[in-house]
Length: 181
Image 1 (cartoon, helix red, strand yellow):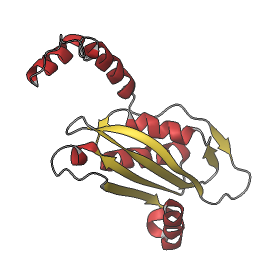
Image 2 (cartoon, helix red, strand yellow):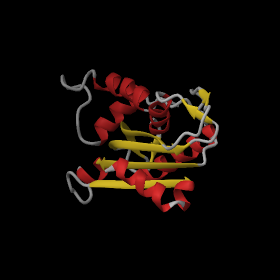
Image 3 (spheres, rainbow, N blue to C red):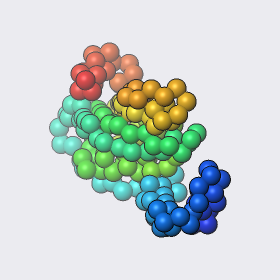
Image 4 (tube, rainbow, N blue to C red):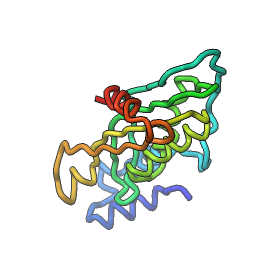
């Protein structure tokens, strides 16, 4: 069920504004269009937009760093945004590099919490590449902390998920951490 323009008008009325005043007349249509874009996940429970390539020789850690993302907090429907760094230790296959940012976008286009987003990206990449290990680090600002509640602008939250060899090999995990900072 999509948000309708009438739903937005009711919200504007509920917060004490007049949805028919000149500055707000076109707002309901804009909000409906924005929501369709922001929440553009397809309802798919797995990421399918990728291509795998065989690796001829041993490949060390693959890192894609500082991928920008935007998502919405599932508790307040307010934005959180920042960067994602993803690493994996391939076995026999690698994923096309451009597909990792697409995986991040796919995961972020649904209401979630940062911890869940971090886990979803790690789990999907692990499933797709059958890697020896996966690590995902997210650093983000949350408007639910900056605009309301505690009101702390600029506060950054970091989350990290490690799977496989990244969990057991301290040196590899440290090498990943150096890529993040």
